[in-house]
Structures are given as C-alpha cells and as structure tokens.
Amino acid sequence: MDLEAFNYHLPEDLIAQTPCAERDGARMMAVDRGQAAISHARFSDFPGFLKKGDVLVINDSKVIPARLFGRKETGATIEILLLSRVSMETPLCQRWEVLLRPAKRVSVGARLRFDQGCEAVVVERLSEKKWLLKFVMTIPFPRYLERYGKAPLPPYIKRRSNSAASVDDLDRYQTIYARQPGSVAAPTAGLHFTEKVMAQLSERGVELASVTLHVGYGTFLPIAPGQVEEHVMEAEFLQVSEGDAEKIHRAGRVIAVGTTSVRALETMADEAGRVHAGSSWSKLFIHPGYAFKRVDALLTNFHLPQSSLFLLACAFAGTELTQRAYSVAVADRYRFYSYGDCMLIL
Image (cartoon, rainbow, N blue to C red):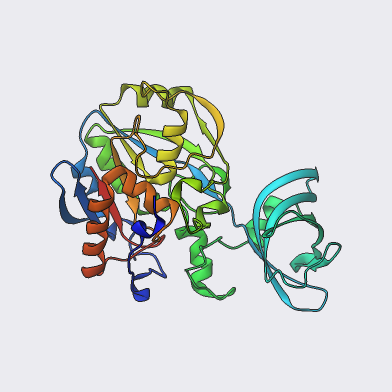
C-alpha cells in the first residue's frame, strides 16, 4: 500500500491555531458511509444524530502539563517534553523519558536548570529522539507541573512560552471529562463536548462509557515513505473497566469519540466483537483493509495527511469517500487538526 495514496493538499491558513470560542460551536461534517453522502452541521447538533440504545465511548485520559522550559549551563533555553515516568526515587526525585529541543550539543551529564531552584541531569541518550533525565525538585513533581508546566501542544500550533494563549491552552487542550492523568497529547475529538451536549445525549437515552488510553508522542510520528504496512506504532497504555465493557456489549451502536477510543475498543475486542475489561498496551495500527470488530460510528477531527490517524479514518469510511470529504472540507474552509472542526462518520 503506497503512502502517497493518503496525501492531500491543505492550505496552511486552515490549520487552527486557537480553539473555537465555544467548545460546541465547531463545524461538524457528517459522512454517511451507506449513502456516500456528505452534509454539514454544528457540533451542537451532534446529539440529534444519536438515538436511544447508542453507547458513546469517550477516552477519559487527562493531558499532563508535559512541556517544561529550562536553561542549559550555557544559559541557552531548552524545551523538554515529558513522555513517561521511568522511576520515582522520592516525590522530589524522578526519572523520565523525554524529548529535548534543541537537542544539539546536549551530552550525558549535562545539567538543566528550572524555576524554583529545580534541575535535571541528562542520564542517558535512549534513541535518536529520546533521552533519560533525572529531575530533582524542591516541591513534589505533580505540584511543580501544575505550577510551571505548559500544555504539550502539537508542533503545528505555534506559541510563545509566556503568551496568554499558552495559559488558556491548559484548559482548552483538555476534555471536560478528563479524569486519568497520563497523556502527552489530547484526544482531540473530545474537545468539542460541553455539559449541555452531555445532558442532551442523556435525555435522548444515549449511554456513556469510558475507556482510558494514554496518548503518547507516537501520535505525532510520521509514517516513513514506502509501504504503509511496515509502520510500527508506539505502545500506549489502555484500560477498560468491567462496567464499561458491559455497557459496550449491550449497545445497539457503539459511537467512538476519537481515534484513541477506536484503538482502545478494537485492541480489547475479540473476534466476535465483545470488548473485554482489563488493561493492556496497544500498538494496533489501523489502516485500510482492517476489519472493525465493534465500532459502528466515529467522531473525529480532521487529521494530517499521511498520518496514522488519517489512515484510520480512511479504513473506517473508505479511502475514496474520506478523500472526497477532505476535499469538501478544504473547499468549504473547515478548520483542521487539534483545535479545528470535526467529522462524524456514520
């Protein structure tokens, strides 16, 4: 399968740099797979597309403020993106896998200094991109992140470290139902939900089920040129409770909110389509040709060309229909990517 088949042209000015003023005010394209039809709505209309007996599956993972800015011993600024905690020696001393920018001229043993008298030591280079840092803090690490950490926005959203928008991102780059800390990227389809929309869904008899999949930095990694099937996903932790698995089993239709919910459900589903409770690490790569086991409809944002997320949408709706929908979205000037508009595939 040639990766070029999943390319499309996107004008740069359609990449949303800020969220919609109201979460549920975003535009929503509805794509009917059976009729190969495309229509247009607002996300506030979303409850009208669902019915009693449907189960809406959300990812309740919470984004941690994983971006830190420090200084090297030379005085130069360095940006750190926390990926996963490796160990905790004490509440004030932890080891983390991280990304560094810029990473040039960083060497093992180098010290990085932060506000509040905190510092980190570069322990090891783990790969071309990843490093192991040992942080020594003057206050417990979670409290330090709450005070000094910033939202780990994707690289196509531009921010100055001290901008007002950067402060607002801590709220808006987070779903209203986030509960389980652990993601370094938001499950962005869920950013559109409001308490009002949730109440309307409940009034219509739509049940809510939660899964947890902690989104890792691998969500931003490109697929290497060549054959799609050779791409390897980064492992991401997921969990499904007994109660939520039972709700999903009883569902008339399963409506997945975002590609992360899809991957959690499809990872935990058996060949008969039953989603089992438990925890696991998912490396599931869904691309055209994949046979979905339990997901009946998908709410998702508009994704980067040639990305694993775009390929998942193509797998669900069909490549031809997805490409047509994206062409319409570009022509109608929909807003793209994390802070952009959304698509409901039925």
